[in-house]
Image 1 (cartoon, protein in one colour):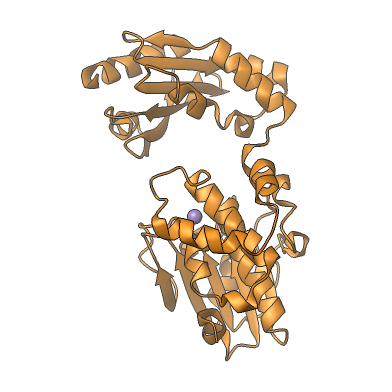
Image 2: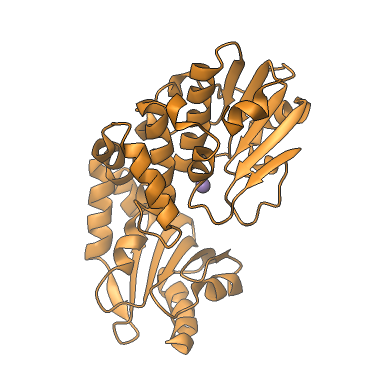
Length: 314
Ligand SMILES: [Mn+2]
């Protein structure tokens, strides 16, 4: 019996949830467990409570069965909290609190365990990697493998980030042996952009300029430009990553207008500038190589203030 089956063997009903604004790893881990329990424990009543996933995840089997209203008043025997701590399940919180037993499965180092049972592996690339160890390969199929692979590619940037371990790749190897179209999955859920998203990225790159002896690159998208291209903040994802990989650049800045004189600032560095320190000095936060904050003023004023801080570290 797989570890997952053991965990829920005494239960008659299981609810599964993850964090608000669900990403690939959250959706993948939640759906893999859902699919596995439906296949192997058909007597179980299983429900998924999650905010509505973005349209690019529609290729995941059973995604249309997710309950995003979360008005269920049932007392579930087991509530699975995936890829986050219990305080991040959003509207599913009352269902989690009502459940008889909570099981928290996660890989975030900040999660100290918010379930009655906790399965936490901070060294794992993704929650999907943690879930793989709870399942029996003989009881899996291509759809379950595809869901787990989804989470792994999203949390590792398609096996690029430093959280990718030999174990991550060994599991990925096992998953692709189930036979699903992984190239299509990666393109559709990770790389694909709308025409408008491509155009605004092109515009942002054209408008970029270099500062501080060319070691810093900066680009600004204001409200007018967003309106002209018919895009929202979510459509600007990926611009900062493209700026960062410009040859010769140590530090990249991307600003977009949120309202009036307010701008959201994303910062990235490549090898030595600590952008978390700069972001936190302006009330934001993040990691050493990727951080952000919200600042007020004209773009030029904001860039001057940031450049002053960056210059000290260059
Ligand atoms: Mn994750």
